[in-house]
Amino acid sequence: MLKRRSRATTEEPEEVAKNVTIKKKKTWSSEETYAVVRLVVMMMLIVMVTHHMASLKSAVNNNVLIKEERRTHSGSCLSLQLDDSVNNRQFVENSIDNSNKRKCLLYTEPTPYIDLLMKAVVGFPNQGSLRGKRTKKYNAIERKFGNDWPPFGYTMIGNTRLENFRAAIEDVNRNNIPGDIIEMGVWRGGAMIMAMAVINEYKGRFGGTMDRELYVLDAFEEIPKSSYGSNSDFLFNTEQDVKDNFKVFDAYNDNVGGVNGNGNSSKKNVVVHFKKGLFQTTVPNIATDPNIKAIAVLRVDGNFYDSYQDALYYAYGKVPKGGIVIFDDVMSHPSVMQCWIDFKKDQGLTEDLNRIDTHSAWFRKETEVVIDMSKMIQLDIVFSLKIRKARRNTAHLP
Image (cartoon, rainbow, N blue to C red):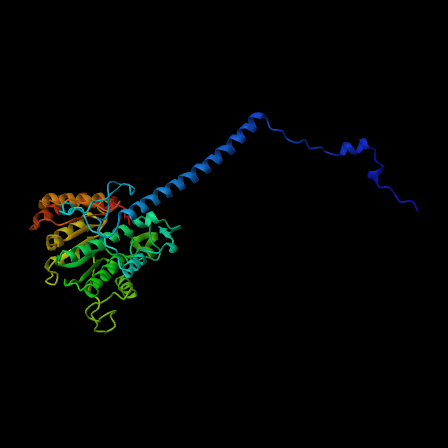
């Protein structure tokens, strides 16, 4: 039986060719080829340069950390920052004649407990980092100088400022400077939790004789949560939140409920007092509070001219000679620096600031002064508009 041949097989080759569309391969001109090759090479160079810059930055940051670690040992002075760059640091020599007393806060090797606690309150590396709502990889140099937000930490001030605070407390303990420890502006309370631990060790383990109490001042919920904008969940803390944080570290004693507020009469922890409210309502009470006879270490994180003005006019008079004053944001907030300049001039102070990092500075009080309160009144009247403008233009930095 003969099979029927398909139509396609019976067509002549010429007819088939007519029905087939032949696609010719596109050829690039030499100019187009050159442009593509140049684009590819440029992209490769950009990737290489970006990688190199990242490696270089990491190497510089590592060198900063390594250099600091090599120069920082028990009995050495903490380094100071020379300008806006964290890479430019000055290593102050601890002279025998104490001629560097103005700039020197001694570093001591922390006990294993204090070392672990300090790492916990600044946030562990494996917990990552935040800036606003953006999660990013942990950066050791940013955390060291307080330029990121620790997701699960208890302070934003970073390792360097926390170490400065510890050294300040140990300095007044070593030199028998009387007075309490006060921090104004505490966020989650991490710096004062460390202060509590340092004083507990001083009293218990090392047999210290100076009696000190802690005063924690913050607006807490007096500032509405909505004021923090999109970062409110991270930045906002109530007074009870911070008290609970103290309890997490077994570092709370309100002198009423005992340790951890549970009715236990144990006094292993020094007493901590919480003062809730805006500085303008809470800080003036420091000057008149008979229980606050002196302030050995005064640490202020207030962001604004008038907040620092309240702190200086109402609290500085109770800082004895040899006491330590720390301004958390004086180097990064122009209005805060202006407040210090005005106060220093109006009260005739001789002390100079020692820069800790990009944001903060400290000094040791050298001369007892009687605060001229009339200067504050004049500032309120003459510069009220200037202060309000500075408040509007000053952004919060950690």
